[in-house]
Image (cartoon, rainbow, N blue to C red; front, side, top):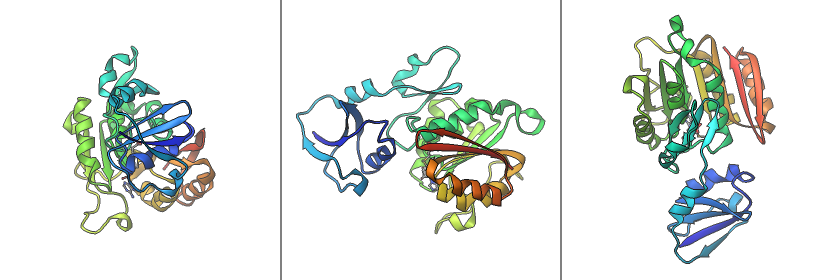
Length: 283
Ligand code: SAM
């Protein structure tokens, strides 16, 4: 069994966990101040992970270990769990089941948790035309976690887009696992803004005839991309619509603040969790 030992904990090296998944790790766990990343084969790792070392270890049931160490994530009214943890959701909480390790968005990253908490606080069920539920756009949907959370929290419909085509079938499967009816959530490959549409990709299409502006737009990306897309965010929100941005390192907050001011957003509010920040604003 091949294990990459990385000094630190799942918390202190939260921002490196995606790099390990992206490099092909099949499981991650933490033991005695060391992150253990399981791999099928040795692979080149990014420089940020260079302080670790490869070790061949005797085989063990790492799947069982991984399942044992993974914890449910409480985010507002939602508890995000793996399929085998449904029973751990406490009364009054809405379970959101995500199969870990398939696409970004298991809830274990602070950026996802911050976004779900914001969606939970918005009262999505009473927003939108006639107070019949918000129309939500999730840019960079990954596992679909935010669009699915929105649907479970009472959105009329949620539309998730991602430039990575691999994520779309995973997000659709997660919606099905969570029993969200097809009409309430939709996932398509795509992004905002013509400048962001890759070769061979169509510009974004919208799920309802004539609807190209949303009551809520949520995006867990990164500060530089929020800066680039801020004008598109404004275009795709109804007047007074709510923007929820995460994936922002606190040191990059000034960039996002300036972009939102430039595009005329108001009521800007910031929430910090460790090195990560969430910014909400109104169009
Ligand atoms: N929404 C999930 C969550 O909150 O956990 C996943 C967020 S993950 C940090 C960012 C996702 O955005 C990735 O799946 C990536 O493929 C996608 N992405 C990156 N750049 C994008 C862009 N310009 N437009 C749409 N999606 C993008």
